Length: 358
Image 1 (cartoon, rainbow, N blue to C red):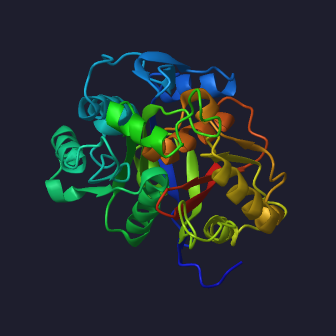
Image 2: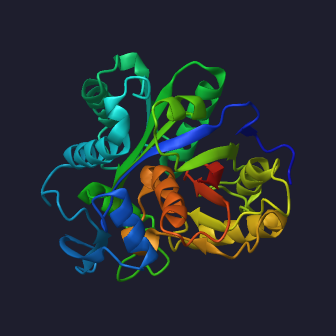
């Protein structure tokens, strides 16, 4: 591993676990976390041809759209509706207990791109503050794309461990349903369409995770779905469109840091959820990282990439993967006690999280 790769990590070390006590999801294959997890487990696809959007050859573009929202709704409205649904689901029973209600919210958002309103962050943050009854300063945004959700969970875990807050609602949302966005992706040959086979299928979704300390969860009699063992972020020195090839140094560093304190082989990773989406550079990067970190896994090739079902969901990825991992234990098909979640943004951020199930 390249020691010069910039890496930051949070690892559980105190007496109080950082626990997942609420889950929410709104995806193309489900209006809730259980429904979305069941669909991914069953290989259900929400991808279809959308005649509203066509590529330069005049062929309809494949898209994994939210089936409930008005197809003509603008992107800000779409993201707000999905966020609201996922957040309300994650709050669940905690909303009735003031000791477990979030006093802070972290919102993971897309990186700046064509078709995305520049004010989207402030608009969605203000709405969340109103909806949760929080001050504007208590809602923070991380516009880091795919990696943003896990980066938000890293920040939340640190705040909780330090005792700065009692519980944190982590949200992630993304939508590519905009003509300008899709055209930009097509021009850069990243949109899967009639003349680009190595691109990705765009989607839209929101995910939510409510985090708190174990002591708070037990006092409020909340179900603990999983616990964060470690979460790390690294910066890939050769990201997308760099002049030198990417050999997975950033992803390797993030995964290595997130698994460094596992007691192997007893605590090997049983299953991985990741944001592979059909783009070649992501597959190649993961291959390098697999080879360097495989000792932490029962089988480094045992992974799930849900983009096959709900499309690429960008900044919503991290929180949604927590819901998928938790479902393996809830529904009785977990093959071990630990899961790995990892994501990577276009700008070079790589994030990895080790989750203890149950």
